[in-house]
Length: 249
Image (cartoon, rainbow, N blue to C red; front, side):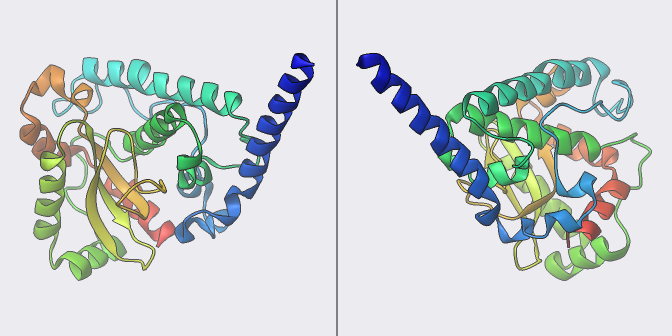
């Protein structure tokens, strides 16, 4: 009799998770509603870790090769591994539910899912938002127009973003976000939370983010987070970010 009750409870639990996964698409943020119409690189993020788009030493002298190797191959790889353990344990059909849809309902899942789904998504975007320090120093075109519209100038925007990154207590991320009313907003989130999550106070579509966990900079900068934040702008891949903004705006 006890075995029968256990099997029944397991069936109900599994069925409930499957029903949740199937219904996610109807409860996602409005900014994700038309994701299928966008180019895949900007609309969805795979559940598996993708190759780093440059060598570990490509961001030197701003970010050293040892930090990049540890960050990508240890920290970020662990988020991807733990995420896939969580989706398997909690019955998420990754063929039917995008990572973005999962994040929009992450409160319905475990702490392991929240931490690692966020960590994986955040890092997959982070890598793409950087390239060689010889990169273009500021954006152009529609993104620059939007920055000037919503922040009055690039200098004002950059100062506000720096404040968000430097002022995030403990570990977390600073973000430039496209809100649901199509305005650019600066903010930050703790730990591995991000603006796609239903538990986040800051909501919208991330355009780019800056990792201010100590593992992102400590080997080179130690406790000098403001220096890391200031120098990081030299690595910003404005070409990718502008394409992302135009695809999502």
